[in-house]
Structure formats: C-alpha cells, structure tokens
Length: 331
Ligand code: FAQ
Image (cartoon, rainbow, N blue to C red; front, side, top):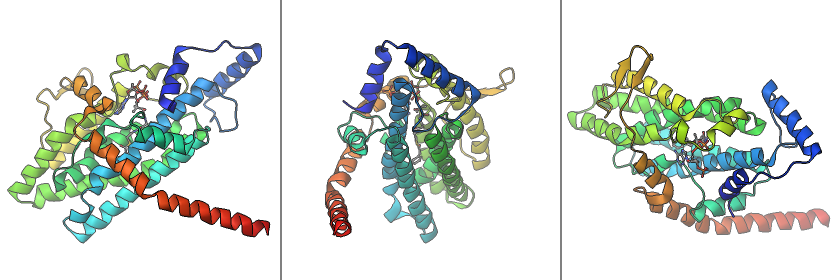
C-alpha cells in the first residue's frame, strides 16, 4: 500500500490512545502552539507523520515530473542564453525533488516505495504537469504562472512545523523566484520586441496555462479534506483559496505589464473585498487530470518509468562500487 493510501486510512480510523500517548500528544500540540519546529527524532502523532509523508512525497514527485514539460524544449530553445537558463532551471527542479525525497526519508518513508507508488500511478503529483508544452512561449508561461503559483504556495511552507521540510523550502523558494523572473523576462522580450506572430504565441500560451495554474492550489477550502488538520498542525499556513486569491491578484497586475489578456472575462477588481473577483473554475477538469485522465498523464508516467528502467545499470553499478569499498575497508 502506498503512503497516500496509508495516510487516508489513518484519518478514517483513529487508534485508541494510552495515557502515555495522550501526554506525549499534549506536549506535541503545545510545541506546535509555541511555533517550535518538530525534528525527525522528536515524538509525533502517527497521523502527523503520514500527512507529511503524503504531502512531501507528492511535492517531490511534482518537482520530478515537472522537469518533463520544459525539458521538452531544451534542444529547441531559440538562443544559447535561453538554452543555458532552461538547462539550469530543469536541473534545479531535479535538485528540489532530491531535497524533498530526503526530507520524506527523515520520516521513515522509503525512497523505493515512494517511487514505486509514482510509477504505478497510485501517487499523486501536481495536476499542472499533465498539460503539453506546444510552443516556446509555453516555457516562459510556465516560469511566469506555474513557478509564480508554486512560490505563492511554497513561501508559507518555509514556516511549516516540520523542520526538514521548512528548511528544504527556503532554498527551493529562492530558486523558484529566479525561475519565475526568467519566465516573465522571456515573455516580456517577446511581447515588447517580438513579431505579431510571437505576441500571438504568448497570448495563446497564457490562454492555455491560466486556468490550470489557478487550479494548482487545490480544491476549494470547503472541499479540501486535508486542510483543517494540516492548518491546525502548522503544515499548511495559508488556505488553498486564500493562496489562489493572492496569486490571481498578483498575476492580474503582472499581465498588465506584459500586455497580455487573462482568459477570464469575469476578472474584476472588487473594491469592497480589495481583491479581484474571478470566474468559475472547472473543477471537473481538475479532478479528471488528478485522477489520471489529463492530456499528458500517460505520457508523463511512461517517461518516469522509462527513466527508472534506463537508470537500472547506474543503480547496480553504484551498489557494486559500495560493496567493493566495504570489502576493501574490511580487509
Ligand atoms: N494536483 O485536501 P487537499 C512546482 C489533491 S511544485 C494534484 O487540499 P492538501 C514546482 C491532494 O493531494 C507543485 N493533486 O490536499 C515546479 C489531495 O489528495 P490526497 C506542487 C492535488 O495536501 C514549477 C486532494 O487533492 N506543489 O510547481 C492538487 O491539504 C515549474 C485534496 O486536496 C506542492 O506540492 C493538485 N494541484 O493540499 C516544478 C506544494 N491539489 O493526498 C517544475 C506542497 C490538491 O488526499 C516547473 N503541497 N490535490 O489523495 C501543498 O501545498 C498541498 O499538498 C496542496 C494540496 C495545496 C497541493
């Protein structure tokens, strides 16, 4: 059974608690209330551990699968400068995946099991990476909107109650910030210096990526089964809907600078709320994609499985090298 499924089962049936457990839990809750970090060797409720393994492993898978849409453009980037930037960005995403798999391992999650759950299609990863990158403008748009949404969601995780996750997020957010700016810059160049065809290409990419980016924050708060407990435990600091609103408010202003139109006729400043109102989100599409039926789900999983199979000789060689070293050290 994968960690996601285990986490769900745990929610459904709470184990009976002994007095000792109750005391430990009280102490744990007090530490959370004080804003202390929980570290790997500290006592923690089993459900807290499983919730973290669920979220961190999904997050790691997202960074890993997230290399694929943009990786598609490395060989076709229009200039050497853009190719070097894109190579660095895609490598950064691999690094983020590694930090996050390591953070999950501090909670006794096995890397092999996490990857097996990804490869069998049981584990979730962000819905956004199941959309295709049809043109060069998609690469800039992913930087601007997808990394923009990722930062909005991830900056609060730097204050997550679990120390290793919070610390991993500090570096990740710094790099995501560079990713967002390079995407915005690439689009700005096309919008200010490009041909009519290039400008139309940017608008088309924005039209296709806007709603999937808005969906990245997850279901509405009143339909988010994990939010209430994760907020109480300080794993999530800001709710899905609040983050989505912050993202939309920022993106509308940035779209004005770029000179692109966001594909939502209902986007309108609401003086009373001091936020932008926006149109209806197609949650059916979101769940279709999350449940494996988006435009590229099968292609993404196949690429991950192929990479795993192709890398078998590297894993075997590394293990053989380690065994050899152990023999030499013992001699
Ligand atoms: N896609 O109860 P909630 C990136 C699932 S990294 C797929 O609200 P929760 C970097 C959710 O897992 C992007 N599934 O869940 C990059 C849950 O299913 P479960 C990833 C989704 O955990 C940029 C169910 O729906 N970021 O972009 C999605 O409290 C460019 C109910 O939802 C993170 O992972 C979704 N969008 O809140 C890389 C950040 N949304 O597990 C390359 C950390 C929800 O019960 C290029 N994660 N679900 O079966 C989080 O902040 C949270 O996990 C949320 C979901 C907010 C994503």
